[in-house]
Length: 34
Image 1 (cartoon, rainbow, N blue to C red):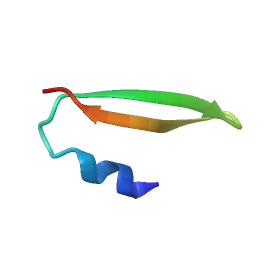
Image 2: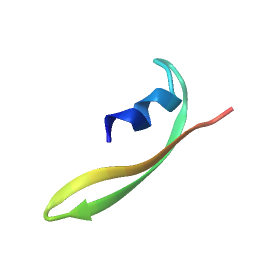
Image 3: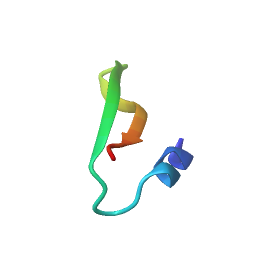
């Protein structure tokens, strides 16, 4: 879901979670580190 990127800006440090789905890595969660 591209809307997940609305939570961060260019240059932000982030933490993220990924899942392997059908041989493709998918970002499932992203949070800015403050």
